[in-house]
Length: 404
Image (cartoon, rainbow, N blue to C red):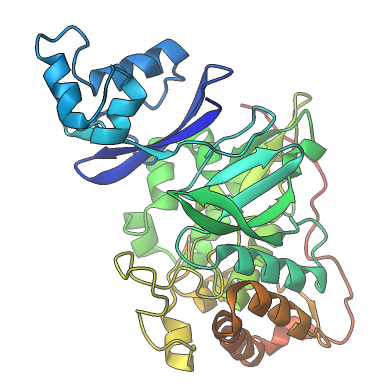
């Protein structure tokens, strides 16, 4: 039966994804809500195979129902099978507001490390390679192009992505993927901790709200640089990563350059080791750059529904930043006021071969659209381009922290 992917909906909203290995009898759940009301299992629960089977069964009529044969006949089934019933009904026969859909009946074979992990993109490992499928637009092209930019920069620790056409099948549709190494495999003893997870365990509820809620009283009363400084001080105090501010500045500069509008706290990570050492994770997850997701979800797959296909200056500035401010330029200014300019890119960078590769996979209109953003960035952020790289962007050396 191999590996199957399920979508969990509550009141019509996608709230979880489940990857079930029908050979190994393992289940992996990725939740998009914190409230167990919306989920197949409580957020803190790692379900067993038996628990997952019980959930599926609860969304089917009982096998012992007196009218089960009539029900099966109405569904066009000649025998009782939970998966076949779920396929036919999308789990709508349960007595809840939640339904379950079999989204992918045969995911790619793997080394038992298939998972959706975080986010809503199809993500899986195969051997020692990591794949992410396009979800809204041309995320793989954005990952690839950002990698090419970083290859000509003073950043030394980042994930390199390549485009892989039509590598992932979802609901009978072939989707392009980006491919990379599994970066944390380079640190077999390291435990990846996102900034969101770190803040949950290393700050009080009050501080957590101040740092993450854009409408908090602290944000309203203090300059943006003070919020950033408070976050960096918290990280440095607990991890010993003295140049975390430099890393954060580099991220803000890179996102401003590429117009990445999805740099939330789960896209910033640290690595923790058993001996108490910490390390900044490589720069990763740039798929929402270059307007890749700039379209209405109900647009039927048509890009550019938020404005003209090619980006002009007005639309360039309408793309909203994260996580500290909706303005890329304000984030960069605040970070630089604390830690100085960091990102350097070779002035003679030539991305025309990269745009040609993108055109070969996605078509020339997508390549032209991405290039329109790049040309605007060249003008807006010309201070990031230098004749010669003179220093690293930041130090990613390990620090000794206080632990959990």
